[in-house]
Length: 174
Image (tube, rainbow, N blue to C red; front, side):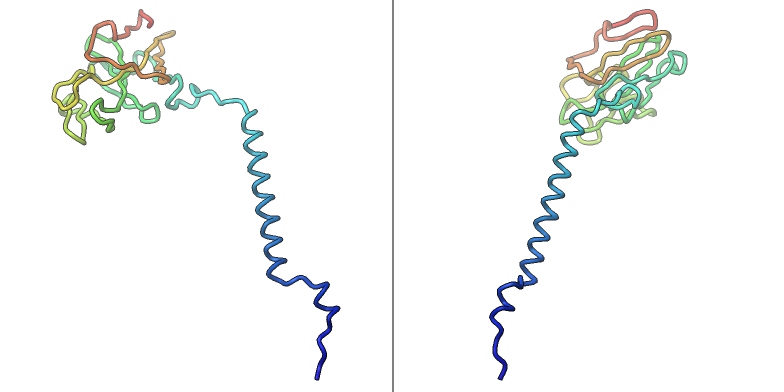
């Protein structure tokens, strides 16, 4: 009969314990790497949103001459439509319905923004034509500099109805 060797059991670590120690060490390294990444990203400069043309920044829409009168151009990354009115004025209209926040598409055939959720309808200036929405679509600030149209999507302006002073013309600035 073989006698158990008490010396052998003292120095050896069970394989399960080795595995758990290695697992905890690995998870600690991953957590440390994530922490370092977060700290370093805090010091990284914010990229220019105007250059990327994204929502929340100033977006260059194009030159004044590139928009036909009585037309609507979608800017999906900016979450707005640029309406060039019959008289050549510009409005940047938020694409979010004022009823429940659904994305409102421009329907060229109807010449209206029609909400797919509850059928609210809005004219080219964003005014309510058909309820349940009870106020006009929100707008963004438009600036025309050197014949180039810029839209600032940093803040949407809430409004109840269309007013002529909401339109920006090539020779005026807001």
